[in-house]
Image (cartoon, rainbow, N blue to C red):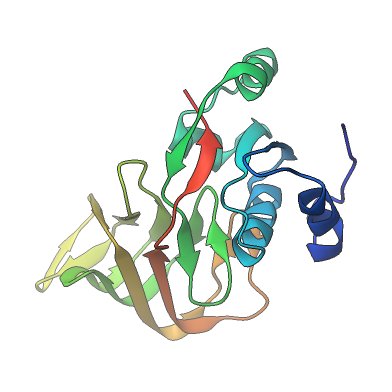
Length: 201
Protein backbone atom coordinates (compact mmCIF):
# COMPACT_ATOMS: atom_id res chain seq x y z
CA UNK A 1 0.00 0.00 0.00
CA UNK A 2 1.30 3.47 -0.94
CA UNK A 3 0.30 6.38 1.28
CA UNK A 4 1.11 10.04 0.56
CA UNK A 5 2.21 11.86 3.72
CA UNK A 6 3.29 15.44 4.35
CA UNK A 7 6.97 16.23 3.76
CA UNK A 8 7.46 16.27 7.54
CA UNK A 9 5.02 13.64 8.85
CA UNK A 10 3.58 14.00 12.35
CA UNK A 11 1.99 11.61 14.83
CA UNK A 12 -1.41 11.71 13.16
CA UNK A 13 0.16 10.79 9.82
CA UNK A 14 2.40 7.92 10.92
CA UNK A 15 0.56 6.27 13.80
CA UNK A 16 -2.40 4.98 11.73
CA UNK A 17 0.08 3.21 9.46
CA UNK A 18 1.75 1.59 12.47
CA UNK A 19 -1.64 0.45 13.77
CA UNK A 20 -2.12 -1.59 10.60
CA UNK A 21 1.45 -2.90 10.36
CA UNK A 22 2.06 -6.39 11.76
CA UNK A 23 4.98 -7.19 14.02
CA UNK A 24 8.13 -7.30 11.93
CA UNK A 25 6.42 -5.54 9.02
CA UNK A 26 8.30 -3.27 6.62
CA UNK A 27 7.80 0.46 6.16
CA UNK A 28 9.34 2.24 3.16
CA UNK A 29 10.12 5.93 3.68
CA UNK A 30 10.50 8.03 0.52
CA UNK A 31 11.71 11.49 1.46
CA UNK A 32 14.46 13.56 2.99
CA UNK A 33 16.36 12.94 6.22
CA UNK A 34 13.95 15.02 8.29
CA UNK A 35 11.06 12.81 7.14
CA UNK A 36 12.99 9.69 8.08
CA UNK A 37 13.81 11.15 11.50
CA UNK A 38 10.13 11.98 12.07
CA UNK A 39 9.12 8.40 11.28
CA UNK A 40 11.82 7.03 13.59
CA UNK A 41 10.53 9.24 16.42
CA UNK A 42 7.09 7.68 16.05
CA UNK A 43 8.54 4.15 15.97
CA UNK A 44 10.41 4.89 19.18
CA UNK A 45 7.47 6.46 20.98
CA UNK A 46 5.06 3.72 19.90
CA UNK A 47 7.60 1.06 20.91
CA UNK A 48 7.59 -0.29 17.34
CA UNK A 49 11.33 -0.59 16.72
CA UNK A 50 10.54 -4.11 15.50
CA UNK A 51 9.36 -2.52 12.23
CA UNK A 52 11.78 -2.89 9.32
CA UNK A 53 12.53 0.48 7.69
CA UNK A 54 13.61 0.83 4.08
CA UNK A 55 14.56 4.21 2.65
CA UNK A 56 14.20 5.78 -0.78
CA UNK A 57 16.51 8.72 -0.06
CA UNK A 58 16.20 12.22 -1.45
CA UNK A 59 19.16 13.58 -3.46
CA UNK A 60 22.03 14.62 -1.21
CA UNK A 61 20.77 12.60 1.74
CA UNK A 62 23.24 12.46 4.63
CA UNK A 63 21.46 9.35 5.91
CA UNK A 64 22.14 7.59 2.62
CA UNK A 65 25.82 8.45 2.99
CA UNK A 66 26.00 7.38 6.64
CA UNK A 67 24.28 4.05 6.07
CA UNK A 68 25.68 3.25 2.62
CA UNK A 69 22.30 3.40 0.88
CA UNK A 70 22.26 3.64 -2.93
CA UNK A 71 21.59 7.08 -4.39
CA UNK A 72 20.31 5.62 -7.67
CA UNK A 73 16.48 5.44 -7.45
CA UNK A 74 16.23 2.04 -9.16
CA UNK A 75 18.88 0.53 -6.88
CA UNK A 76 17.25 2.06 -3.81
CA UNK A 77 13.87 0.63 -4.81
CA UNK A 78 15.36 -2.83 -5.37
CA UNK A 79 17.04 -2.71 -1.97
CA UNK A 80 13.81 -1.56 -0.29
CA UNK A 81 11.91 -4.44 -1.90
CA UNK A 82 14.40 -7.28 -1.60
CA UNK A 83 17.01 -6.20 0.95
CA UNK A 84 17.52 -7.51 4.47
CA UNK A 85 16.91 -5.41 7.57
CA UNK A 86 19.79 -5.28 10.05
CA UNK A 87 20.11 -3.61 13.46
CA UNK A 88 21.31 -0.01 13.27
CA UNK A 89 22.32 2.28 16.17
CA UNK A 90 19.52 4.67 17.08
CA UNK A 91 20.93 8.07 18.07
CA UNK A 92 18.78 10.37 20.17
CA UNK A 93 19.23 13.93 21.37
CA UNK A 94 18.13 15.39 24.70
CA UNK A 95 15.40 17.52 23.08
CA UNK A 96 13.23 14.62 21.94
CA UNK A 97 14.73 14.20 18.48
CA UNK A 98 16.62 11.51 16.61
CA UNK A 99 19.51 11.67 14.16
CA UNK A 100 18.69 10.02 10.84
CA UNK A 101 21.61 11.46 8.86
CA UNK A 102 23.34 14.20 10.80
CA UNK A 103 22.92 17.23 13.05
CA UNK A 104 25.18 20.18 12.30
CA UNK A 105 26.21 23.48 13.85
CA UNK A 106 28.86 26.08 13.26
CA UNK A 107 30.70 28.25 13.74
CA UNK A 108 30.77 27.62 17.48
CA UNK A 109 32.83 28.53 20.55
CA UNK A 110 32.73 26.03 23.38
CA UNK A 111 33.58 22.51 24.44
CA UNK A 112 32.65 19.08 23.14
CA UNK A 113 33.13 15.79 24.92
CA UNK A 114 32.73 12.32 23.44
CA UNK A 115 32.28 10.24 26.56
CA UNK A 116 35.21 11.35 28.77
CA UNK A 117 37.35 12.57 25.86
CA UNK A 118 37.50 16.30 25.14
CA UNK A 119 37.19 16.79 21.40
CA UNK A 120 36.94 20.59 21.32
CA UNK A 121 37.92 23.46 23.59
CA UNK A 122 37.66 26.78 21.80
CA UNK A 123 36.51 27.62 18.28
CA UNK A 124 35.28 25.36 15.52
CA UNK A 125 34.09 26.20 12.03
CA UNK A 126 31.63 23.32 11.97
CA UNK A 127 30.49 20.36 14.04
CA UNK A 128 28.67 17.31 12.70
CA UNK A 129 27.04 14.62 14.83
CA UNK A 130 25.95 11.42 13.08
CA UNK A 131 25.22 7.78 13.85
CA UNK A 132 28.23 5.50 13.70
CA UNK A 133 27.18 2.36 11.80
CA UNK A 134 29.70 0.39 13.86
CA UNK A 135 27.85 1.42 17.03
CA UNK A 136 27.28 4.68 18.85
CA UNK A 137 27.62 8.34 17.91
CA UNK A 138 30.27 9.97 15.73
CA UNK A 139 31.26 13.63 16.18
CA UNK A 140 33.34 15.46 13.58
CA UNK A 141 34.91 18.85 14.37
CA UNK A 142 36.31 21.00 11.57
CA UNK A 143 38.84 23.77 12.37
CA UNK A 144 39.89 26.35 13.14
CA UNK A 145 39.85 25.20 16.74
CA UNK A 146 41.91 25.04 19.90
CA UNK A 147 42.94 21.81 21.57
CA UNK A 148 45.33 22.22 24.49
CA UNK A 149 45.93 25.83 23.51
CA UNK A 150 46.94 25.04 19.92
CA UNK A 151 45.14 26.30 16.83
CA UNK A 152 44.73 24.00 13.88
CA UNK A 153 42.71 23.69 10.72
CA UNK A 154 42.42 19.93 10.72
CA UNK A 155 39.40 17.71 11.23
CA UNK A 156 38.95 15.68 14.41
CA UNK A 157 36.60 12.72 14.54
CA UNK A 158 35.65 10.51 17.46
CA UNK A 159 32.99 7.90 18.20
CA UNK A 160 31.41 6.77 21.45
CA UNK A 161 28.10 6.19 23.17
CA UNK A 162 27.44 9.88 23.91
CA UNK A 163 28.46 13.38 22.80
CA UNK A 164 27.95 16.60 24.78
CA UNK A 165 28.21 20.18 23.52
CA UNK A 166 28.41 23.31 25.66
CA UNK A 167 28.88 26.71 24.01
CA UNK A 168 28.65 30.48 24.40
CA UNK A 169 26.94 32.23 22.74
CA UNK A 170 24.09 29.78 22.07
CA UNK A 171 23.90 28.25 18.61
CA UNK A 172 21.18 26.90 16.33
CA UNK A 173 21.36 23.16 15.69
CA UNK A 174 20.35 22.04 12.20
CA UNK A 175 18.64 18.69 12.74
CA UNK A 176 18.65 16.57 9.59
CA UNK A 177 18.42 19.70 7.47
CA UNK A 178 15.85 21.55 9.59
CA UNK A 179 17.04 24.41 11.84
CA UNK A 180 15.84 24.12 15.44
CA UNK A 181 13.29 26.62 16.74
CA UNK A 182 15.73 28.41 19.05
CA UNK A 183 19.45 28.54 19.85
CA UNK A 184 20.79 26.37 22.66
CA UNK A 185 23.85 26.58 24.90
CA UNK A 186 23.91 22.82 25.57
CA UNK A 187 23.00 19.71 23.66
CA UNK A 188 23.62 16.00 24.17
CA UNK A 189 23.39 13.08 21.76
CA UNK A 190 23.49 9.45 22.80
CA UNK A 191 22.92 5.93 21.57
CA UNK A 192 19.57 4.51 22.55
CA UNK A 193 19.48 1.20 24.40
CA UNK A 194 17.63 -0.46 21.51
CA UNK A 195 18.53 -0.46 17.81
CA UNK A 196 16.20 0.18 14.89
CA UNK A 197 15.96 -2.17 11.91
CA UNK A 198 17.25 -0.65 8.68
CA UNK A 199 17.21 -2.30 5.27
CA UNK A 200 20.75 -1.68 4.07
CA UNK A 201 23.45 -3.32 1.95
